[in-house]
Image 1 (spheres, helix red, strand yellow):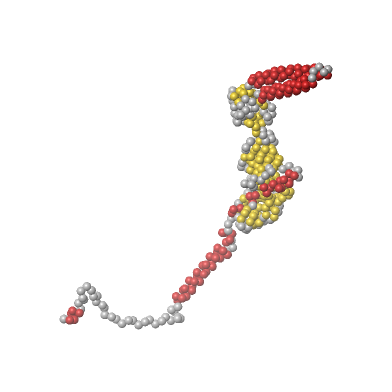
Image 2 (image 1 turned 30 degrees about the vertical axis):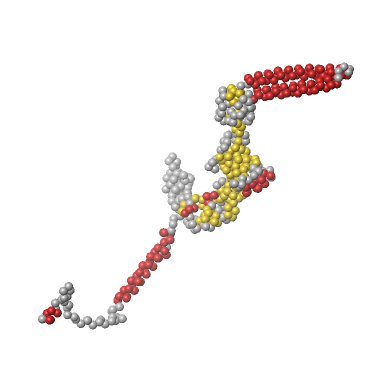
Length: 447
C-alpha cells in the first residue's frame, strides 16, 4: 500500500521515469607523438608553405618582375613648354585712373536777355572763337547810344570850362579878376574831366555788353547737349548755362599709385626723364592710347596711402573719352638683358616660388626661383634659371618631381615607317612610296 503511494507523483508535478544508470566508459589513451598519427600537423605546415609561395609569386609578378613598373606606371603627361630667354624688361607701375579733360567749360551768359539763336549742333567739334549763341542785342544798342550822347554833352561842358579857364588866367595877369575865380574855374575843369572819363567808361561798358550778346567758344573742344532752347530769356544768375564745351585734344588721365613708388618717380622726373604712360581699357587687355607723365600731386591721400598723378595724351583719334575708367601703366625704367620666363610657368607652393624644368630624359624637376618685375606676360627671374632652359607653361597641375612628360605636338614617327606621302623630296622617297598624281619619279637605284 505504502509502496504504491510512493510511486504516485504529488499533485502539480510530473515525474519522468529515469533509465537505469550505467557505468562511465574508461578514458582513451593519449595519442602517440610519433608514427602514423602526426598527419594533421604536417598538413598545416604544407598549407603555410603554399600560402607563402603564393604571396611571393604575387610580389614577384606585380612588383619585381621585369616590365611590372612600366606596365602600371602613369603614362607621360602632355604639357606645353617654353624656352627661358633674355631681353629688355620694363619696370611698369600700374594704377587705376580716370580720363579727365584739361578744360571743361559751362558756357554762361554774361548778360540777361532773350536767346535768339544757337550756332552749333549737339556733339559738334568747335574751334576756339566759333559762334555758339546770340542774345537779343537791341536793348544794349540803345544803352550804347545813350552813353555816347551823354559823353558828347559832357565833353562840350569840359571844352567850355577849359575855354573859360584860359580867359580867366589872362584876366588874372591883368589884375582884372581875382585869383579865387581862376582857382574855382580850374576845379570846374577837373570836375568836367572826371565826368567825361565816366561817360567814356559807360560807352565802353555798353559796347562790351553788345559783345557779350554774341557768345563764342572759349576753347577748342566738343559741345554737349543744348541746355537752353532759343526763345528763352536767359539770365546771368542761371546755374545750368547754355552748353558745356569739353576740351579733348589734348586730354589727361589722373591715376593713383602707392606712396612708396613716388620717391623713384620724383628721382626720374628731376633727372629730366620723360616717363611713358599707357592707357588700357577696363579689362586691362586693350591698349587705348599712349602719353607722358606731366605732374605728381603735392599730397598723399591719408585714407588710401596713394598719390594722384596726371598724364597727358594727344588723343588725336578721340579714343579717350571724358570720365572714362582706364588702367594706367607707367614705365619707370628698363632692365637690360634680363632673364625672363612666361608668367604661366611660375608656380607657388610648399617649396616657395618654383617652375617645372624639362630634363633631357623627358622628365621634369622642381626648380625654386627668385622673381623680379613683371612685364606683360613675362616675369623676370633673378636666380634659379638661365637662358636656354625649358620650362613647363601648360599642364603643371598634373606634375610632380620626376614625372614623365610629353611635349604637346611632339608626335615622332616610328623608325622604319615608309613615307608614302606626296611631300617627300624627290630622290628620298622609298620604293613603296605613293607617287604624286601628275608627277613621275625615277626609281632610286639600289645601293
